Image 1 (cartoon, rainbow, N blue to C red):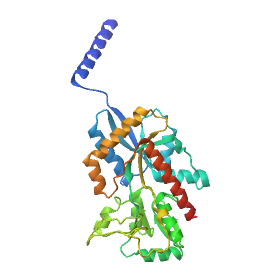
Image 2 (image 1 turned 45 degrees about the vertical axis):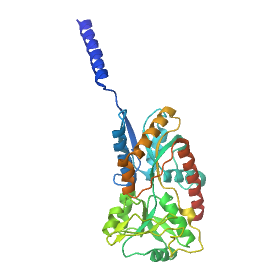
Image 3 (image 1 turned 90 degrees about the vertical axis):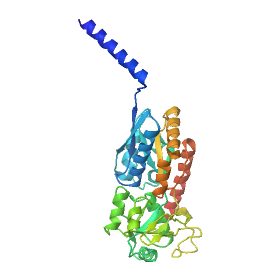
Image 4 (image 1 turned 135 degrees about the vertical axis):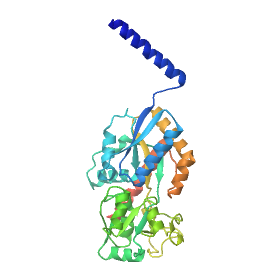
Length: 334
């Protein structure tokens, strides 16, 4: 009797398999995209949009976003670096995490519990221009003066985050000081300024775009050598002055070169070092298709981020060069 039942079940499984093959059913593999920052920030928005578009463009994988916050990105990096290289999880891997890793290892600036050599960037998905935001009644001149006379408080990650390295190295050249008040994620960092807990906020264009349109926050400086013209305020479009180039803010010392404070910002989709090249090639191909989709590229443009693409070995080389520049900015910060 039991043999008959098992034989019947076996036939049923084979029959269902044949039907699945006939109608084109196939197993869809779920792949987690680990996001190191909280819901509402730019990294979270990028991760979710990437997953949404990638899921529409292919049917082999179901990409889902999972938050793993803490330590301004370090918690996710530690978790990811300790996973087996055979795991297909992906990581939203920010430049700032790499910067702080290198500073921590070289200068003992903080405890680093992960090895970033175990994280391999595959494709850039997020390229930002850092913006210095202030409340409407503040000005760049007033902020620089306060920085020189007692110091200012900023939000924008933890101490030695890339926003802190950018602003801190600039303020140091201006003869001032900056203290970082840590918050987890861009949304919380922005709220710190709105609640007047800090003097300024350094963040992405996306995270404060609505507040700029409403007039509750003002972008007063772009960490770039090109004028930033994307913002619209209650009175119309504005051009945000920069820290270098022809649009350099007149409030800054004209004789100082602040280009070292223009740090690569944003991040990559990353996998584990040692992952099979076939998987790296697959994610690179999916990422190129995502960028080629207007749903993603037009959205990136709409939130005022930059369309910058680099893949595989070129992505790794670009990150290493950016990290060296960040370490140089830290030397000015000291």
